[in-house]
Image 1 (tube, one colour):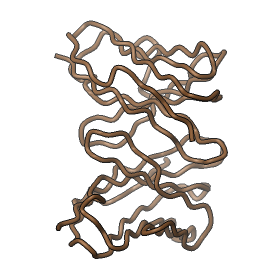
Image 2: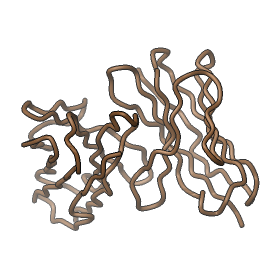
Image 3: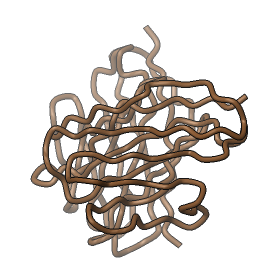
Length: 114
Length: 110
């Protein structure tokens, strides 16, 4: 299965600022997925990032708040913009396993907004 | 509305016992079913997948699927303290993204 490098692993940010999270995959993948996991909660899909097209956002998530880039088939970024304490969460990128169905997740970014 | 439900737990079992984790889903179009294990502070890792009714075994893990009852379970035999984690059930409808359940926290007591 794919190996995903995600960074930063954690950060503490001031409210009103932005943070960009990067995910690098060791193989080419069509779609990359960005999830949020709030404390004690399950995974919520933010958006699906396809190379060469705009990301598809789930209900409750908008591009202005969570802009996503997907410049090639191995890399994607998620920016959390104009952060508030409510954005404190773990953010995870993932890819589909392809021949091995099921998602592989990056190591996650633990974001704390103060 | 697509929903996946799990008991949040914690489910406590003694070491060496069988841990039984349950999951129900609402969409009869669901075709693929997955169990993920998530240790505290870590990202989820896939441990089992199942696609057809019946049992799927891998080592100490057995996934069971009953589509008529819209029910999928995970059995962990000979539970070890290292199995203590949150277990997430995920369901996929063909062509669509995964829907994750809220997770069940398992505690295996030495």
